[in-house]
Length: 185
Image (cartoon, rainbow, N blue to C red; front, side):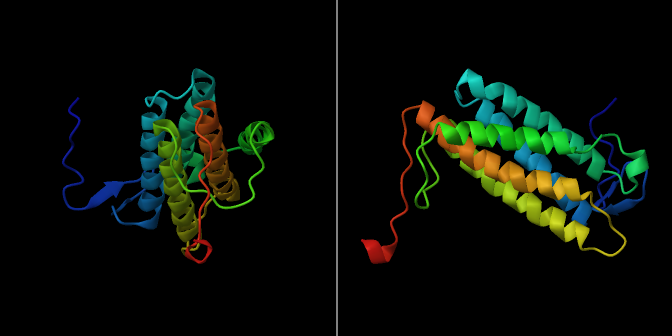
């Protein structure tokens, strides 16, 4: 089987079990941004991140594929993926709480950065926030439905990525760098 089909050469793509739509459609923007986030997490996993952080990163990559597959179908009954469950969200919250308990209390905004993996996690967080905006845009479209758990998951995931970036940086011996506003200089 060839990787290229030529069916998208006119700027359209096919939804799973559904019609062909513009590649700029809100649904395509939403799951395309989730795919971009997944790719950034692949970079994180190959940036010398401590092995203890790899299993949760791999799990989240799989969950993002599940969510993307669910979004690739306008009909949830025909979806290839199971989407997201409350258990997935609770797992993120549990990990956030665990990592935060080992971190210094955050008293001000911090600059994105740190070690390579930590900095990439901050990039992932910003891509995740964009994915959330794309999901909300999709949900606001007439005749479109988005599982509310999908939006909740992506919102929680951006928090997870922020705390994970801090944890990875701390584990690498890099502390948080506080933001210093101009008026404080």
